[in-house]
Image 1 (cartoon, helix red, strand yellow):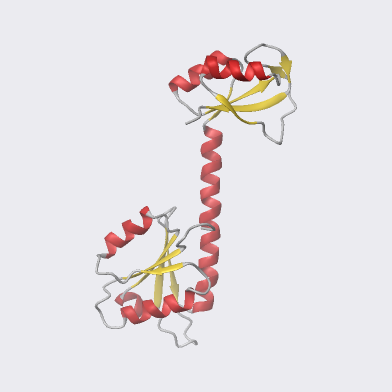
Image 2 (spheres, one colour; image 1 turned 45 degrees about the vertical axis):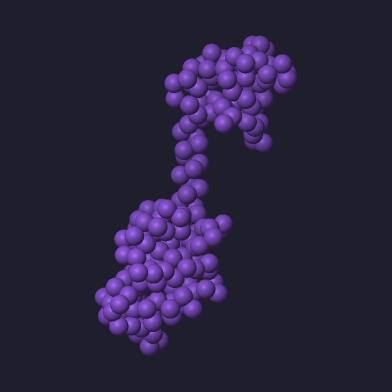
Length: 203
């Protein structure tokens, strides 16, 4: 969400019905100073628009249609989970769409939640596909069978780093700033060492 060119896509539902486009435009005018917003008032169907903005990676979709106008609400849909949230008007504001101040707070909270969820998913995916291995043979087998990253010890010698690429088909990706401090052996020369290093295939 922090780098998305469009953070919110406003989708009018049944925009030919009275008041829908007016309220969508009012939402756009209220939100464009706080977020990067796109109002899609093209003639494409709502389903087409939903798919379009999902493919573009827009984190949150804001829907407004005739039933929402009747109920004094709008619908927010998260791209990462598909979860929808309905925001109701405050009766005292006299607005026919969701109260803007509350809506901004909810949207800020949603964008943060989307960011945190995507980060957690990426972190889990990285950890699930990182394997602690002890020899270049194990690293080579990992590359040939399941892919991912290998975490091994390394003696620090350039010749062992180059030999790992030759033997297992991987190159060093990084040495984590937070080292485990445990002792092991270099997967190439077998020398005792404590430095953690990650290996992976360069594409």
